[in-house]
Length: 80
Image (cartoon, one colour):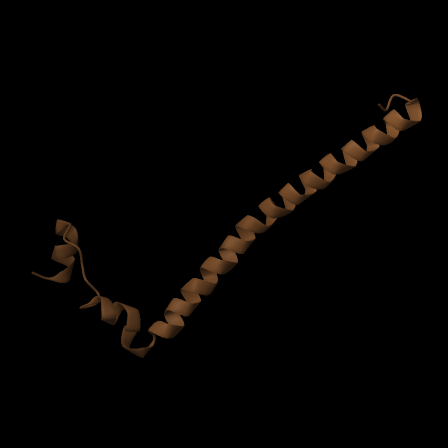
């Protein structure tokens, strides 16, 4: 059975004979897997960076509002 016929029938097509062959990729595996790893790290940083900055901003804003409220209470003479 040809490869196209196997693909049409739904059978999986194996491009590597073993897990070792997949990882080594005839000597190119180090470069390929390093590229995948770096790509994942960059994408994760691009996604997580704004979330961390937003959290830090909200904490700073809450602290600033608390300080402003305390200053307002002191000037109004309502501090305990």
